[in-house]
Amino acid sequence: MEFVAAAIAGYLLGSVPVALLVARRHGVDLYSTSDGNPGAWNALEQLGPRRAWPAFAGDGLKGTLAGVIGIALAGPWAGYAGVAGAMLGHAFPLFARLRGGKSVMTFVGGMFTLAPAAALLALALGAGVSFAARSFAWGVRAGVVAIVPAQLVLVGAQQTAVTGALMCMIGALFVLRGRPRTSARATSAPAAGPPE
Image (cartoon, rainbow, N blue to C red; front, side, top):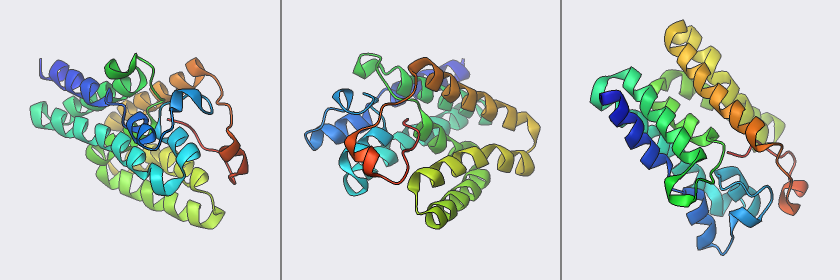
């Protein structure tokens, strides 16, 4: 029962369309820009980093809070249920006509609760790649991909397998929603990243 409660709480948190709200505050409708993805990456492309950072923080915080709720209810496995619920809520939000993003930042935020040491290592790697490549997009990619091997080394295979399943959910959303189009802002950027 606690797992179901964690998943439902996560879904409701994930359904809050943070990036849409941030973009609307600046007069931008993310549904009508770029690939129409109402996630933080599209907000970044349309608004630039200074105005889009609350979208990244908010989308990540949804996963973090969902993980915290799950762990408080019944331990780490319920934390995974909460984060999975938040990712589904972000992808198919109850409060935004079931038209959501690809859950990348919600996953990342959840990992700071479920595997904090691995998430911190991945964050450090992502920051290093961003600096070396002068590309935030490549830093994000490197950081997200690094979470699984870092967790495998630090925690072991059992929890890492569930993390891999969450990443497969992201992959399925990319396949389901197709390749993103690029916006004028994205074309001028050094490298476009994965919309969430």
